[in-house]
Image (cartoon, rainbow, N blue to C red; front, side, top):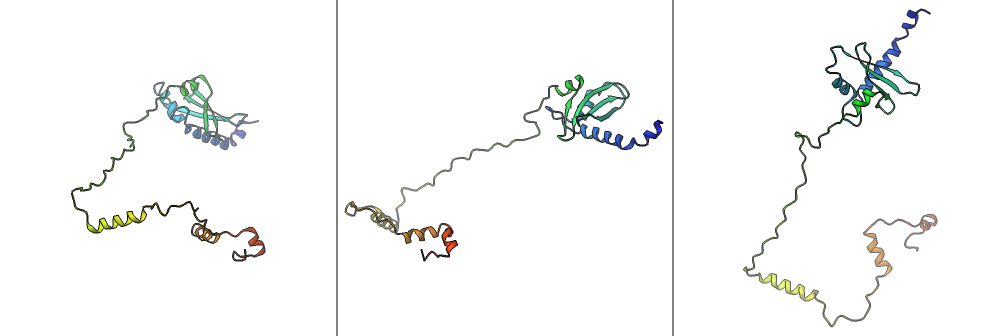
Length: 195
């Protein structure tokens, strides 16, 4: 078969390979923080003037092999790209070396500022002037309150405190939450006054 007859169908597969290699270059290589393209560009910076060429092809397991090469030379590094999880993994010794280089992640950069919560200063109590004379109305009101609030010895007895009735408890409950009818009230139509 003539190769020109096959080459006219090569457009979509080549476009897919270029698109997949572009997607793989955007993935961050773990455990670092750099994407694949930045990592490989930094590695080949002094190795020659030829442009870095990327290619990709599908593997039988559904993942893609992504290759970075300088010009037509042998590959610089080979990677495995999984488009479903958008993850990239090293596939050869060179890519393992790049992925396992010591990555220094600063704990705090000089440009970022972290604001720690400050302790509030203790609030000082209001100052009371003890030398000032108290008002007559204040002292008489204080004495009246203390006289009525203080339990007298005569009123204390062994009588038990009265238990509030059901109607009193129902009134106090009504203020707290909405009344929900019981199931038999819904089923038979009985109101609360019928119960």
